[in-house]
Length: 286
Image (cartoon, rainbow, N blue to C red; front, side, top):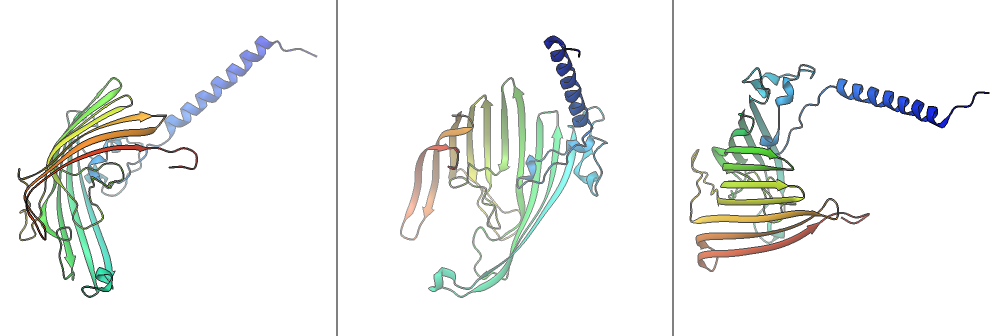
C-alpha cells in the first residue's frame, strides 16, 4: 500500500481545479453571443453585438446594425419600428351613470433612427402616430397625429467607480413604479418632456436632476405638439443603496403652470413636492 502525502494530495486537487476552471472558461468563450432584447424604451437597446460574426444572422439585421467604422463596432446606425394595436370594449362607462358603452381600437405606430458615435454619444429620433378608431370621445392621451415622439442627444462617460449621463431634447422618463413620474405607456399617447436630464452614479450613490417643459399634444394636424415656459416641471433626486441592495431615495420636485384651468378655478398653479422612499426585500416581504 502506498501512502499519499498531504502535500501531494493538495497538489493533485489544485491541478484538477485548474483543469475544471480552464474548461469552464473555454466553454464560456465558445458560447455564442446573445442578441439584445427588445425594450419598451427602444433607445436603451445596444445592437453593436451584431458586429460579432459568431452571432447567427436573422432577417433585417442589415437595418438593425449598419457599421460606420471598420475599427470600432460601437460606431453604427440602427433603424427600428413599433406597432401596437389594442381593442377595448367598455359597456358601463362612469360605472353606469353616464354615457353609453362603446368598442374601439387604439393604434400606436412608431419608427426610429438610433445613431451611435464617438464612443460616448447617442443621437435618437422617433416619429409617432397615434389613432383611436371608432372612439366617440377623444381625450388628450388617446390620439395624436404624426408628430415628433423622441428627439434627443445623450452623452455618457464611465469613471472609476461611477458613470455620468446627460440627455438633452424631447424624451420620456420615469421613477420607480411610476406612481409619481411615469412614461404613461398604458394609454395610446405617452407623456413626453422637452428636457435636460442628468444622471450621476458613484458607488452606492445616484444623483438625478432634470429641468423640463411637458409636451402639450394637439391633434389638429401633423407636427403641431408644443411646449413652453408657461408649463415647467423640474426635480432633483438622491438615491443610496442601504442594507445590501435595498434603496433609500429622496427627491424634491417643482411644478409650475400658468393659467391652469379647473372646473371651478383658474389661475397660476404652483406645487412643491417632497418625497422620501425606502424600497427593498427581505425573506417573504417586498
